[in-house]
Image (cartoon, rainbow, N blue to C red; front, side, top):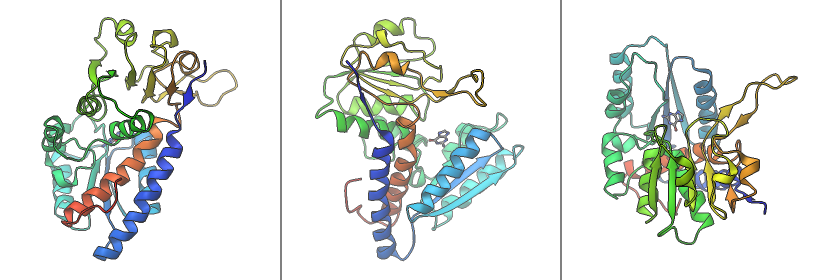
Length: 297
Ligand code: GUN
């Protein structure tokens, strides 16, 4: 059996098209573009790549992009002051503070300063609480992307066994909440979990984001299950390669022999994140203007 390859890129392209069209409508209705501010502290190369990609995609979708780059030794108060200025800026609908922050900064305090109505990552205490309470809210981009992919694969997620591996505030925790709201039976696994293999034997849905290359072997997975791999891990270069290959947390080739469908890495889960960020920014823009979003995004 060879599994269906879930095409995150194609999904993202369609979502970006819908968001772009609706962003134009927003601009006609309000006389301004939806605006996304991204704050990057320091020079982490991976974060640099993400932030540049986010800025390009924002402009391509007909939105305004505001990039704020701060030095690695920026102090807490300077960062909080910037977030407060962005909270007050009417041209800014969404604020994303790129994580992780340098170690000397208090990440939780910075996140708690973001206006929940502009929190396109869904990680402020208000929005995380709203998600747990089953209230409508902005939800972290990568888990929401995963949920949208799953909705394309299943008519109904109700009663399915789901295992989420990883418990970060941006991925594992909101992912588990989203699956719970779809009436899945959710198990959260993480680095201290004793017997991941036996949990996976009964999982209809596996969502992985642990950052350990090829951790999950194909024969651990339940035949016919669906696997979303959020891992992005660079291997050491093979002889003759300048850079190592990027792989996920799941041994892809092995898994395709067992499962019904799986996302590749790259081109799967990760490819959806920026499209969902644009979607969240547009939803925030409509709400901040007191208007209804016209179509289901
Ligand atoms: N770092 C890696 N992914 C993300 C994301 O989705 N949001 C933020 N704020 N930081 C990230």
